[in-house]
Structures are given as structure tokens and as C-alpha cells.
Amino acid sequence: MLDRVREALSRVNDPEIRRPITELGMVAAVEETAPGQVRIEVLLTVAGCPMKDTLRRDVTAAATAVDGVDAVQVDLGVMSDQQRAGLRDQLKGGQADREIPFAKPDSLTTVIAVASGKGGVGKSSVTVNLATALIRLGRTVGILDADIYGHSIPAMLGIADARPTAVEDMIMPVPTNGLKAISIGMLKPSRDQVVAWRGPILDRALTQMLADVYWGDLDFLLLDLPPGTGDVAISLGQKLPNAEVIVVTTPQQAAAEVAERAGTMASMMNQRVIGVIENMAYLEVVCPDCGHTHKVEVFGSGGGQDVATKLSNRLGYPVPLLGQVPLDPTLRAGGDDGVPVTSSDDSPAGAALTAIAEELAGRGRGLAGRQLGLSPIGR
Ligand SMILES: Nc1ncnc2c1ncn2[C@@H]1O[C@H](COP(=O)(O)OP(=O)(O)OP(=O)(O)O)[C@@H](O)[C@H]1O
Ligand SMILES: [Mg+2]
Ligand SMILES: [Zn+2]
Image (cartoon, rainbow, N blue to C red):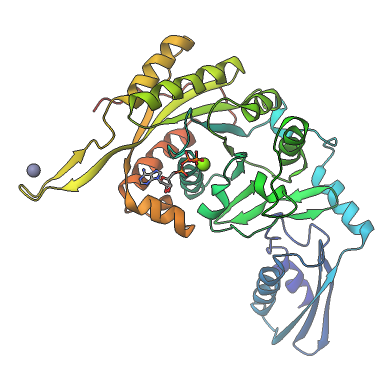
């Protein structure tokens, strides 16, 4: 029976590391204390691990389901320094300190930076919703919130108060809705502390988020960049030469011009711009006169296509308009509630973003630089 319990535990993943607890050396003891009574000792990576309730629940559920087990007692201990160091080495898997796995030429992770020229165009919303849609398509996804001005990603994912766990010098990204996220805001010692994210401090924080965070095997890493063409873009450009860029814009011409600057900047950093997303493209309203749905172009029209065309001319390769995302109150509400609209099927903005995610997923794993087989959308 104990063998079957151990076997069941090999299907319990650590919620942060997402590997079986049996492989991670977290199961210290499995014993039968009385007929049908099983005691399991689980070693947490750190005391006060934020996921310990989840672990206890998962371990209890797995063991209870085993034939012949009547009662399960789970004792939580903590790894010794030595055990933790061993785990760290295991996770690093030969990766040198401060090495960025995504920058290696043989990396299979598609890194996409979501950029814009201007604030408030929906970059963070697009990032979170593309990530969620990619998860639903069966991909493994990480989100790195590198926006030094805001940190809206955690709230949009419902993890505003989460803090990452550190195992030795490795940081565990915060698991949520099947994806992993880390925000530059989480690296601040305290929330209200104002840190000047500039120069070497900024560079160190970005390196930390890329090299010291245990991302595991990712199909996609999405980066939410601060608006404009600042320090962060330059720093990330140097660290992630294979990253690709998606430019988000609104239909307004002024936004379009700035978005174009962001794209040009990306190409200066040798990052390929793979497309433009026009957000807040239109509002669908049911007409009181005819009862049909009309598209009201609240912020004008043509901005996204215009940016795509200008970028194509400027960069010398086709930069498609990947899609138009309508204005949609459910998208805003989903952001406020921490439940991305792409996690369910029935919103106009969610549908548009899911369609874009399908195109991204269809490019295949590890084919960075391959062109999207998309033609510009005319409307
Ligand atoms: N298509 C949309 N429909 C309705 N509301 C939207 C849409 N896109 C974004 N919003 C809302 O607009 C606001 C700004 O969006 P978001 O925070 O994603 O933009 P941002 O470009 O990341 O902004 P910042 O520059 O501040 O980081 C949010 O309240 C968001 O919910
Ligand atoms: Mg943002
Ligand atoms: Zn009408």
C-alpha cells in the first residue's frame, strides 16, 4: 500500500516549481502508523511557503484516493540548508549563475515583448489575455511584468498581494491560472517603497527576473514593457536578443505615430516586430433602430493598419496587423477582478485576443523569427 501512496504522490506537483514533489526531494517520509492510517512528511522549500495549504490539500487528496488508505496525516517540515542547496542545483540543471536561459541560441521559448509608444493603450490587458488564451491552447506561459511605472499585471491576474518564494538565490514565480508570473514590483522590499528603477538597479532587477527566476520549461514568455522607448527596452534588448515584439496601439493617429517609434526602437535593438494589435478598435452596439449590431469607431479608425504599413515600409519586412480588439466593458471588468476575459468564451474582446493567440501558437515552438502567415486585416 505504501508503494501505491508513493506512486500517487509522484503525481502531486509542487505548485510553484510544477514538478512532482517526489522528484524534488520534498517527501521525507511515508509510513503506516496503524492499519489504514498513513503519515506523510512533506518538506517545504522554505518555512512560511505561501503554497503550503495547497500542498497539504493536494497531498491529502492524492493519498486518500489510494485503495486501503483510511486516514492521512500530513506533517509539514522545512528543508535543511543542505537539502535546499541540492534542490537549487537540481533546478539550475547545470545552468551557470546569472545565465539567462532564454538568451541561449538553442532556447525553445518564444519571447514576446508587448510594447507601445504611449501609456494606457491596453498593453497589460493584451499581455494577460494573450497569456491566458495561450494557456487554454495548452502552451506553457510565463509573464514578466517589467513595467517600472505601473505594476498592473498582478492585479489583472488576481495576485496583487502575492510575493514570490525564494529558494536559496532562486526566485519562484507566482503560479496563477496555469501560468507563472513575476512582476518587477514584487522585487521591491515593500509595496509602498519607492525605488528609483534606473541604471544599474533596474538592470540588476531585470537580470534577476530573467536569470534567477525558476521559469522551467516555457513555450512562451510574454514581457509587459513600460510605455515608450526607455531604459527597460534597451536593457531587455541586450539581454534577450531573440525576443520578438508586438506593438499595441489604439486607432488614433497620434497613438499610431508613437507606436511606430516603439517598433523602430525594437528593430534598433535587433528585435523583430512580429505584428501590431489595434486595441479599443471599435465598440459593438445593438442599434435601437434596426436591431442589428453596429461597430462604432469611438477612437477613429485605421490606426493599427497604418502602424503596420509604416512599420513594414520602415523595417523592410512585412509587419502584419495581427488583429483588432474591440472596446469591451467585460475586458475592463475582468482586469479589475483578476479574471482575464480570455479565460471564458463569450466576450468580443476575448474572442479577438484568442484568435491572435491561436496565430501565435500556430507558429510552433522554438521557431522564433519565422514569419506569421497573416495578411493585413482590412475592415
Ligand atoms: N479593449 C478594451 N476594452 C475596454 N477596456 C479596456 C480595453 N483595453 C484596455 N482597457 C482598459 O483600459 C485601462 C488601461 O489598460 P491597460 O492597463 O491594459 O493599459 P496599459 O497600456 O498597460 O497602461 P499603462 O501604460 O498604464 O501600463 C484598463 O482599465 C483596462 O481595463
Ligand atoms: Mg500596463
Ligand atoms: Zn441600425
